[in-house]
Length: 268
Image (cartoon, rainbow, N blue to C red):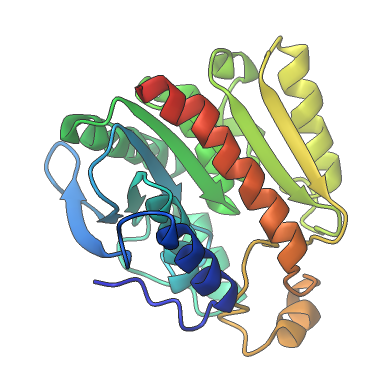
């Protein structure tokens, strides 16, 4: 299936620009099942390549926005796998999303991400990284800590310190992104971001970047307010500022640079 970017004007333009630098003219994702018994569903896209990225969804589930994020990596030359940790369910309201995240078995989800990395290695990828958003950001750090097959991680606004020991991340390059106006206390606010930075460096981590974005709130990389009808409605409910294109471009430049250095470079 072709990734539908109709509701994501920023990503439609961004992915088109990336594709203009390659021989491809579109990004297609297909359904896939993996794991020991083939019971873990997901979407996979991009040509098979030496470098691969696992993209982890937000608390809403595998939405078009998550696939738009994944399309950026695929258009940049990576093989991309998006595990569906909710098994097809979507949160169409904050209450539903909260329920889905609350019911998720996080250690089991980390194990499924490890199987995703093994699947990509089985396809021929020599280096696998992980990129997560919101709930997926927290899982990205945990997966890097727990999965031998995951070589590096990018966390976008989400940390669960109970899922990993900072020392487990030694040897795994880590990059994190947080919005200054994020109001999710203890999960993705600035205090949490700074605690992550301090914790990793106190553990002796030599390569742990934590970036803050002055105009960014929670989920500042989303250019689609769904499941809300507008950014105004989202801000009224969640206190999240509207999308800022300049902040998004800076963040993506850092993310793609990180993977080029720590993932693509390892696969050469």
